Amino acid sequence: MAQDSFVHKGKRKILVEYLRNRIGISDENVLSAMNEVPRHLFIESIFEDFAYEDRAFPILAHQTISHPSTVAEQSELLQVKEEEKVLEIGTGCGYQTAILMAMKVHVYTVERQKDLFDFSKKKLREMNLYPKFQSFGDGFAGLPTFAPFDKIIVTCGASVLPTELLKQLKVGGKMVIPLGPTDEQVLYRFTKISQTEFEKEEFGAYKFVPMLGNTNQ
Image (cartoon, rainbow, N blue to C red; front, side, top):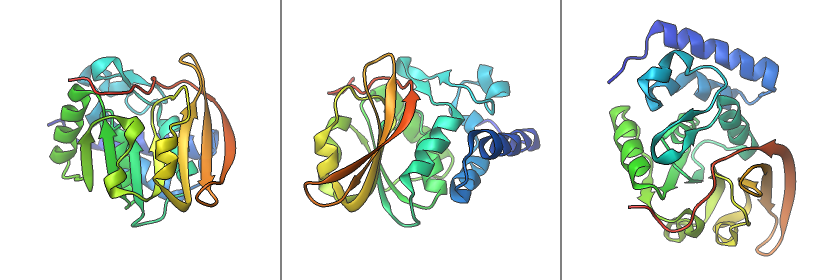
């Protein structure tokens, strides 16, 4: 496995300062997690020198690892507290999963692409990171067996709001999700006020890979 060198750690510190000063991330728990997790271990070695720039990179199954600023912004919008139950839809390469775990929450994560499910499971184990539950399955369905969740984070753009996921939130819980057509989504945060009422907040335009139903063997 590739190493986490002093050079990598130095680049992470620079990235954290960029996130703090240029992007406006103020949650110290998020910044600490971004400083702790070696992003270069989740991408192909040819991109390693650029791992701590605010860029997305291709990963398996025609997907991408999100910009560090997007990961930080979504993580901050979740407003997680230690020991909370967090459902992640779209494990991808496992980087966002590792960030959440560094924030000391209990992560339940779902991935529908088998190549990415296998890659992220192997990668997280190599780093001695073990989510509470890691599933190969349809993200639209969530994980009703383990519901309710304190927080839900969706790392892929959905064309319609997956109402099944809202049902799996605790009252008082929050879901951060990009919604909209394939070319551009708007990032939203839903807060569950009661079993049938939700507060919706909007946080600007982003571009995520699309959220897909079913599973890909």
